[in-house]
Length: 206
Image 1: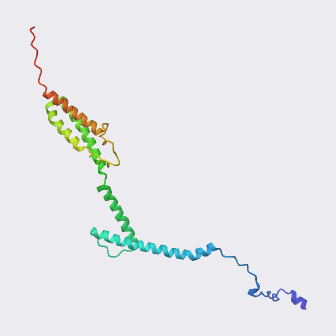
Image 2 (image 1 turned 120 degrees about the horizontal axis):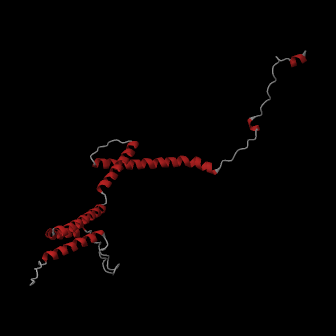
């Protein structure tokens, strides 16, 4: 009868084995690396310093932007961080556009003007020398004076201690010098032809 009760499927299962106490296990503790400890300690500190730098720079940028906008007639009382950055970018773009428009290198414009004026003066001198010598005699001196006035000022002489040679002369191969020589020579030829007396016909007995 006991054997039948032991083999019966409706019998209660045997109790689970008792677990040993917690301290009985021998846990192998993994050593924590120094890099991990450094990161765990330093990362929050570095993050606080980074945020402090950002906030300090934003405060300084806010003061600069408020004063700059006030100088332009804009009144800004309260600015958030995003507003400060947006206004700064907009202000820098505005300054960049002004610099492009107002601070365009004037030397480039002056060189273009001199080149165009020299070309026009050369064409006028060539046309008037063959078409109307009297008009050329009146116009070409004025064009020559204008060309000389358009020439860029010579560079300042170097200090005596640094350079003892003669001052550099103007480059004869430059386009402005060539055009000036063309106008001057045309003016001289026209002046000589205007001043020379007309040749009287030679009397021949036959």
